[in-house]
Image 1 (spheres, one colour):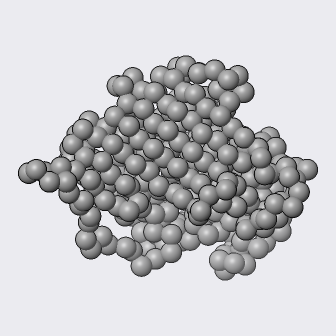
Image 2 (cartoon, rainbow, N blue to C red):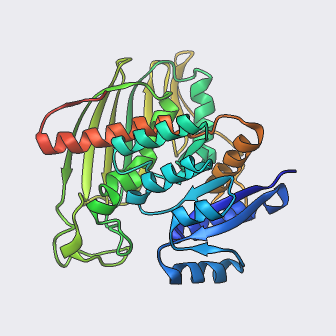
Length: 353
């Protein structure tokens, strides 16, 4: 079995908790973690020690790509590095699994997708929520036609007091936005995936910063520097699709609500579904029915959805199949995010092209 040599760009928490363990799990299946890159030397030292690794390390991803014969690269950097690192890897002949969101902007995402097409390489984005056991069960229900025509969806990723007190999550220059691009992108991507990715035509949205720049706000995920807070702490959007369906999305780092919420609803002509309950609501034989699954298998490993994401990426490389989360779909998602922010700035509905 030919080895698949993997390089990791960015050795922060997502790499250490998910990507590196995910690839190491596949060692016996011919996957070799070959090199690591991070601009912080201590981060590389810590990562090697954490996983008991002896690998080449680099402070510049272009140097790593030039010196190492890699088959694929995992991009686990802050959002502002997604596009340059991914495009460099694709230009070097590597396949790429890039963390979400695909990029800071749709323009950057388009360049990534174009580079993958030009070099005939595979580009997968780390939208792991698609691989949750409950989400997959709902996808099977939708694809089997139990909901009929889906005409409306609501997606929400809401934290009561969850502004991250570490990293770059509060920097618009680095991340491109706040909760909408950090946690909102997860539930938006999942909802679009379940709907079959209809074509968006217009977006209207709003964004508020009511807590992030205010001193004395309680932080349940650490305290942040209010002087450096440049993103929204709540955003909402309304999307119209070419098939007549609509979708609303809400995302917050901080909001005066009862508790944190991460879920989606789909309404169809035959039935509706609460994705993460999960439950299907329908009418049959003169009665209303609530249908719930029984015995959904839960893998007894850490981060099973992330692990499945990596397994399917490797499988796509080995069997030359399409990746399960293609860059083209995530470009659509990014266009919607850009549209919400633009609408929030202008106060007008934005057309998606």
